[in-house]
Image (cartoon, rainbow, N blue to C red):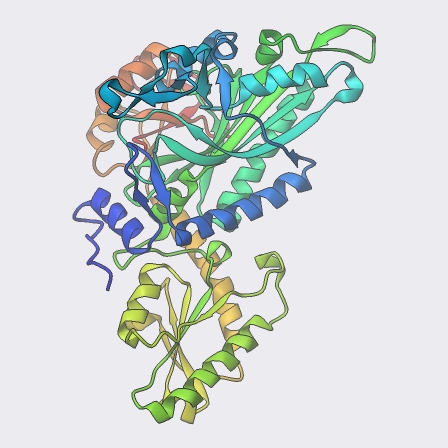
Length: 504
């Protein structure tokens, strides 16, 4: 039986850890800062991968793979990039181990010290642009639209499962273009892919827009982002798309002959989302009973639990459960599930009682649980329990077996929409406008939320707000029109409001 989950209102951080643990998503490993992603957690990541991969390929991108190790000199070629990542790099210095003194333990072999240290990739711009130099000679070779599914290492000291770990899984896109307009359009196109995925698949509403210069990706001209509000009213940066200009092409001498016969540097973008999205999914929808999953990303949509006490009841009940499962799987695949069949699990394990199974599927976030026993069978009916409506209110009694598959399919669709509407309502209710710095400081920690405030555009003011309140500029929201005003801190002119929040 799963352990009791700490209520969100008591200790949000402990609640999050309890949900991850009880749902069997991940656990800490013996390697500092690294996690083991368990089957249920990895199944969610696979669903995310599949959806995103289809979206990338639909916009003309292809997958490739580049080395895990990056020569240190590559990072040194782009000054802003190396400064941004230097403190997080894991470095390989030797290629072999030998027995230690007196034959005890292992030590790096002094004779096997590398001539040049290798960096375990924190991101791949440098190794990829060094490769692109060999691929690009003419405008005919452009654009290059490549995505990579990989792992990266950024040496984090304070870690939290999925949200911040030393090693994590992600995708990173790296594109090369013949002109600035095409590259900037690519960065915007990918931002829209991320927004669509977050809202249509994760049911997680996001704000979009550029980052401030103080928050942009090291080496980028500008960074576009999607920002989501978690249930503790903190912000989660859920995805970023960077316009890199010609910075990396110049650093790695990637030139091409233009249509006009001139030698020019290529224009670049990079973009990525990671397993951090699973943390966002948890904190957007889950409750004090455990994980809640939007159906489009649920590895199992329906868990059917047979209920019987007598051995003579067993066969008929289990047969009815499997017949119902076949009926659910046989529903014509719907476009909203990307034409995938509804995933059904008949939990006929004999070593566990029904109550144990009910609890397990609840904490794992399975959208619909079906209960079917002899009394239900006598009425040719079953009981449905919706995960998004906990307790007795979420139970639908006496659903005819003949119409249950269609009813279940309809409920799944309702749940996807309902979770999005609930999350959007919560976000909008905690999106506030402030003009006074004193008011901002009084509210940022409690009650918290997203604060729309004027800012004078300087790094000095941005740093002051961060140092005094821990809040940062999450994005310059694209949905808001220009609104001249005065900075809440300095009183200097401001072109428009930006979003401040505490964040993960």
